[in-house]
Length: 209
Ligand SMILES: O=P(O)(O)OC[C@H]1O[C@H](OP(=O)(O)OP(=O)(O)O)[C@H](O)[C@@H]1O
Ligand SMILES: O=c1cc[nH]c(=O)[nH]1
Ligand SMILES: [Mg+2]
Image (cartoon, rainbow, N blue to C red; front, top):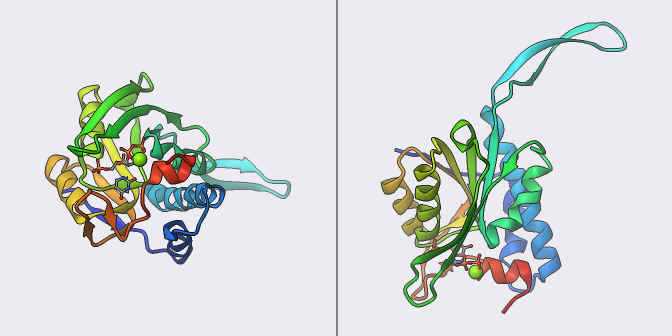
C-alpha cells in the first residue's frame, strides 16, 4: 500500500497558512506556492541515490558525493499544477517536464482530459505528479492511469492539500504510488471543495474568476 507523508516542516506550514488566507493576493499566492513546492521537493528527493567520486579541491583530493543520475520527470496537472513547477525546477533543473491537461467538470466533479504531452522516456524516469489540490481524487487518479498506460512505472504524487476522500481513492487505485502533502485537511464540502482548503487553486494562481 502506498505511503502518505505529511511534510510538517515549520517553513512549509508557515507558508501554507498564508496560501490559505483569503486576503492573500495573486502575486503573493503564486510566489508562496512555488516556494512551498521547492521545500517539498527538498524533502521528497531525500532518497535520491548518490555515488562517491574523487575531486580536486584547491587544497587536496577529496572523496565526495554526487547524484548518481536518477532521471526525474515532473508532471504538473494543468492548470494549477503549473504553479508548482518552477519551485521544483529551481532544485532539480535537469528534470524533464510533461503536462497532463485535466479539468474537473463543475456539475459531475468528474475529470475531463484535454491534453497530454510527456517526455519520450517516461518508463525510465521517476515521475512526480504535481497538483496543489487532491479533492475527490478523480483528476490525480486519471492522470496516474494515463501515465501508467503510456509506460510509467515509478510515480510519486505531490499535492499541497488533500481531502481524506482523495487520498483513499489514490491508495485504492494506485497502491504503488506514495503521496506527499503539506496538509491532510478535514473533508470535502457539497461542491467538492476541500475544507478548510484554500479555495480554487487555479483561479487564485492565475487571477481568473
Ligand atoms: O481531486 P479532484 O476532485 O479531481 O479535484 C482536484 C482538481 O481540481 C483542480 O483543478 P480544476 O478542475 O479546477 O482545473 P484548473 O487547474 O484548470 O483550475 C485542482 O487543481 C485539481 O486538478
Ligand atoms: O478545494 C478545491 C478542490 C478542487 N480544486 C480546487 O482548486 N480546490
Ligand atoms: Mg480550478
